[in-house]
Length: 390
Image (cartoon, rainbow, N blue to C red):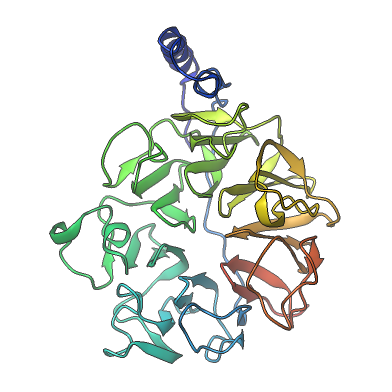
């Protein structure tokens, strides 16, 4: 549990900043004047899934891995799509990988092979509870809150560059603890802690990691107490313990919920007037929020049908809009221009542009149910984790 008292300091900072913004753009002034988030208490925990089948819904990049149920992953509890390769956590806490090796994404499990088509265990990993992907790095959360990573040097090495990283083998990310979830991402890592705080590392050009320069692991000190975190690219989005949605970073695609679009800030600002939000997800420059009534909201870049209403123009919206045509949902996920919602029956609803192929494709960009041989629990990229049939 934690409580952050930042309202007075944030107000003073905004007042001072606005005094020096006379030469800045309207977008800059709007971001600096946007409302701050409420203080919030939060104590999130690991989301644990029932053992089930992993299903690949689209071809992995450069891989000949067949689309469909992944052989050897009939009973796994978490999955991650690293584009060229996939990773999964088994009920006994071990981790295995499959696909094409890129930047060490197979963690040596391939024995030097450039591609493996049957999952092989990652050496030395135990007590894993979840896995996620950031760029070509995989990040495993353990039951004790530590994180082990491999693949892309910068992201797997906790922001260390080049020779600063001791080894490309799977290793614990130093300075990272008490983690319950890691958001899928591309250029940086956002990890949610059990006290509701957010730890981050990687590229920080848009202040997604806060005001401090550099790429190393750090606590994002101004982040409110959060229960869910998403990394839609350029900005961080969280659902707070107070049920609000807050964001910080770049607003060129309206991810901060501020009009006119543009500008950026390391200060968390409130997105719209959403209430009772329990879950957030991020795709390529668009974000989703799920509220306690099961409604799904979307904002950000509108190209490729991300709004779920058939809109395909290359623009952006900063005000969250409710996604039409889906029943009350219990989880949301996003990847690239595709979005997903799992309803209370386990049906997986999808909308937006995607690379899925038969039998997992949908006829248009509107929300449609994907034909799956079981209820959906988790989606990462183009791989879905199914649960047992009720």
